[in-house]
Amino acid sequence: MRVTERLSSMAVHSRQLRADGRGRADATSGDDGPTCPGSLIVVSNRQPYRHEYEDEPTAERAADPADTDGSPPAGTNGGEQTGTQWPITVDEPTGGLTAGLDPVVQGTDGTWIAWGDGDADFAVTDERNCVAVPPDEEAYTLRRLELSDEAVESYYYGFSNRVLWPLCHGFPDLIEDRANDFEWYRTVNEQFADAVGEHAADDSVIWLQDYHLALAPRMIRKSVPKGATVSHFWHIPWPTPETFRHCPAGGHVLEGLLGNDLLGFHVERYADQFLQCVDRFLPSASVDFARRTIRYDGRTTRVVATPMGVDAESYDRDARSADLDRLSDLFEEYGIPEGTTIGLGLDRLDYSKGIPERLAALERFFERNPDWRGEFTFIQKATPSRTDIETYERYGELVRSEVQRINRRFETADWRPIVYTEDVLPREDICALYRHADVMVVSPLVDGMNLVAQEYVAASVDGDSALLLSDRTGAHERLGSHALTIDPTDTDGFASQVEHALSLSPYERQRRMNTLRQRVFDGDIESWMDTQFDWIRRVHDDSRTTEPRSERDSDSREPTPPI
Ligand code: F6P
Figure 1 (tube, rainbow, N blue to C red):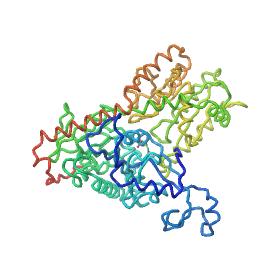
Figure 2 (figure 1 turned 135 degrees about the vertical axis):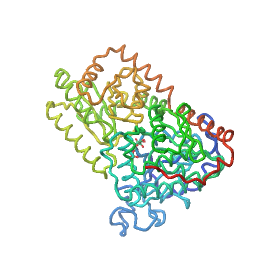
Figure 3 (figure 1 turned 180 degrees about the horizontal axis):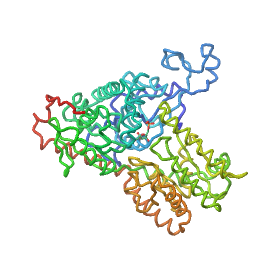
Figure 4 (figure 1 turned 180 degrees about the vertical axis):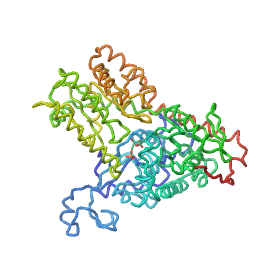
C-alpha cells in the first residue's frame, strides 16, 4: 500500500470539479498507448485509489474541542462540511490487478467503477460518487460504490473469498457455504450492474475484472444500450469440472459469465476448463471447443487465453534509479549483515501462495548446506490479506511461527536465515529489493498468473540474478524455460533448486535473465491491452455480422441453471 499524497480538504474540493462521471472533457491521452474501440468502463471490486483520513490529528484538530477521538464527526462528510482541515491521504491498494490496469486506464480516458472501501472515499466524491484520479493528473473518473458492512461481509468475505477463491484455486475443502452469502453476492453484482448502466453509452466497452463480479455481465446486458460490448477478464484460475461441481449456485455463476461477449483467462488450460464446465453443467448451452465459443440464451460468448503482463518499463526505470543508501538503511533496520547473498519472496498472505512449503525448502537447504549459514539471508515480505476470514488468520499465524522456529534453529549472534516483514514498503524500496536480490522465489501452490515474478524480471536490470518459479503458476508458461522450475511441495527438489540457483555461473544467470527479460518486455501490460482491445473489436464486429438483430436482442428465454 503506497501513500501517494496528502490532501487538504481544499485540494480535494478542487479535484471534484473535473469528476463529472464521464471522464476527462479534454481527452488528450490515448495517443501512444493501446486504443480502446469505444469508451472504456473498467469494473472491479478493488479500487485503484483509496482516500483515508489520517490517523494522527493535526494541530487544528487537536485544538478542536469537538474532536475527541481523532476521527471526523459522525454523520458529516469529513472536514469539508465542517470547515475543519481533516487531512486525507490517498493510497493505492495492494494487488496486481489495480496496479496493472491503472496506467492503461489513464491512457484511455475511461471510467473505473469499484467499491469505495476507504473511510474518506465519499468525502471527496461528487453527487454521482465520482472523483477524478490519479490525484495530481485527473486522467480518468473513478466511480465509487458504497457497500454496507453486511454486504461486504457476505459478498466479499463470503461468496467471493470463502467460495469462489478456494474453489478456483482447487481447495474445495476450504469452501464455506454460509447462508445469505450468495444472495448478497447477487445484490452487490446488481449494484455494480446498475452503476454501469448509469455510465454506459452505445459505444461503451465494459470491461469487468475478476471473480467478484461473475453475475454482473448478464445483468449488465439488460441495463446498457445494445451497441455496448461486455467483456470480462478472470484473473484467477478456472477449475476442472470435478472441482467446479462443488460450487454452490454454480449454474448461476456460469450463466452470469455467459452475459459476456468476451471472457478472458490467463492460460489455455483455464479457458478449456471453463468450456468443459459449461458443457457439463449447462446442458442447454452449445459449446464449440475448437473455436472456443459458447452459444447460450441467444448470444455468443468467445473465450480466450491472453496472459497478462506488467508495466515492465516502469519497473526497469524504478530499479535503475533505486537508492542504494536507502536499501542499506533498510538492511540495517532488518539486521541483515552487509554482503550476504539475498533471497527474496514477496506475497500476499494467502494459502495459495505456498509460503510454509517455501520455508520448509529453505530449512532443508540450510540443513544440507551449513556453509551457507551466515552467508545467505532470505527476506520474506508478506502482506496480510482478508484477515477477517479465519483460514487466512490461521495461515498468517502458521507462517510467522514457522519463521520463528527455523530462525531459532539456525540463527547466530549476528545473522538470521529468514528476515520476515509485514511492513508496507514504498514501490521504490520494492524495486531496489528486486534489483538487489540474487534469487527470487515464487512458489505458489496455484496461481492464475503471478505478476510478482514478472515485476522481478523487469526490475533485474543487471541481469545477474535467478528466478525460481513454481510450475503451478500461469507465469510459468511464459518464463518456465529460463527460470529454475520448482514443484512447491517437493521439499528436497525445491531445496536442490535453491542450491542450483546459488551455484549458477554469472554467464548462466545472465543468459537466462536476458531471455526472461525479453519475454516480460514483449508481453508487457501494453501488449496485453492491445490484445484485449483487438479481441473486443473482433467480437463486436462478429456480433454485428453473424447474429440477426432479433436474436441479439433476445432476453425472453430464462433458462434454469442445473446446479
Ligand atoms: O486476481 C486476484 C486479485 O484480485 C489480485 O488482483 C490481487 O493480487 C488480489 O487478488 C487482491 O486481493 P484483495 O482485493 O482481496 O485484497
